[in-house]
Length: 261
Image 1 (cartoon, rainbow, N blue to C red):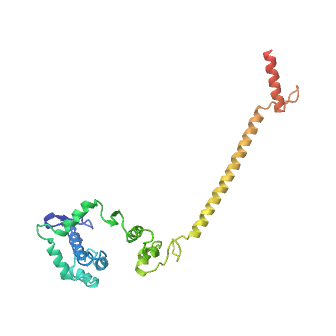
Image 2: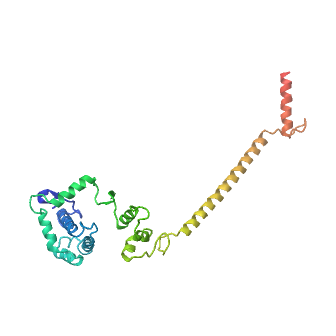
Image 3: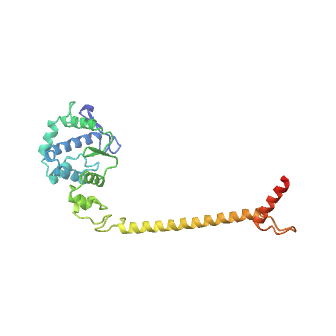
């Protein structure tokens, strides 16, 4: 089953198996649950720490097909994240529910926002109203958020973790165990000194090759010129020494004068 509310709200089957596993209707239900959690625990301050805690717990405990719609698993996530189950259940019902052939206020608002913002690819994230699409990751979102701050207003956590090879771990632990610009090292990272040295070596190698090629080309041209001169230079005969190119040229001038006479 891909839809709820008699076909009003649908989602694609995440595991591409309509007979078993997670259904599209399950995805719609979980989406509504998270909308309600955000409304109660994130809408006021725009941060929603408890919402994030719930999502983290759900991914860790209930993301598999066997537990995705397991109410006990969801209740366990509520408990660890600090969510009041009764409040969320009431919110889901009061918004219109998912069972009847009737609209759901929260889902309609999400569809309207999707159309207004031009969301055509899922998932899509927005940072300062700019859409970020495709293969989203916590690292790419973190870098996008950090890049959105004006100069002089960047939070310390961005300055500390933006150059880290693993920003997510840096944010979680409060320190960078390996970065690209100093303050630690990690496999796969390249220091500025190493990069600069490597570039100088590459430039030196190509410069040497260029100089060798220039000399080689110049020598080849000289050899070609010598060959051309040798080909057109007359050989010595009994009439005199004509091995000198200038003498040969003068002989040519004399012959032309004789013929013109």
